[in-house]
Image: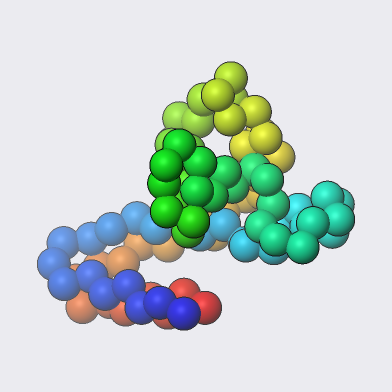
Length: 81
């Protein structure tokens, strides 16, 4: 679980469901389109630029679901389970 606190200004947040695509893939872990831990990143971080994804480098990202989008303003807190 995480808390994201926006102290000043605002931030756009895109949240992808962690379990999206698991049933179709029969996987026990995150869906492959996440590329978590790829390119030397931490296990909970993806190198994919979601604003302009390279589908040549990360072709499975084409299967990513629509993210939930929210904007945090100064003083907002987002709980991420």
